[in-house]
Length: 124
Image 1 (tube, rainbow, N blue to C red):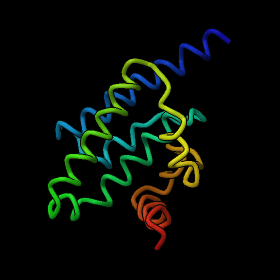
Image 2: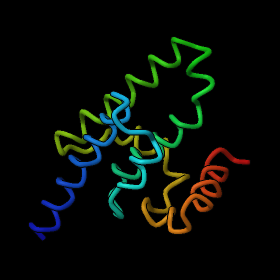
Image 3: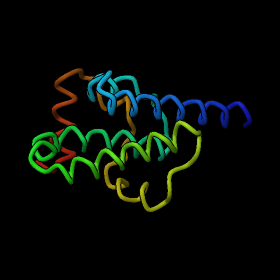
């Protein structure tokens, strides 16, 4: 049980660093998503879907600077919390629960799988 807990904490820290790498433009969203661990941790799944949402809003982010700043702050909060190995607040996790089906397994079909899941995520 202790080993599983340590793995969960390490996965959160890793994902927090991935989110930071997107925010600092050292990695694109797609690259970061491909590196997410396959886990049942709702905190990691929340970060995963927050990044998908971030990517989907790219045009809106360029048009509305306030929205961009809010979204960046939100992702920074997620990254900071996960990098510390902590759980996200329940309301933050609950915001994405409709989309939880896992993380890395969604991309098994490569780019085609990415497009299919992305369209499902934005309800097209």
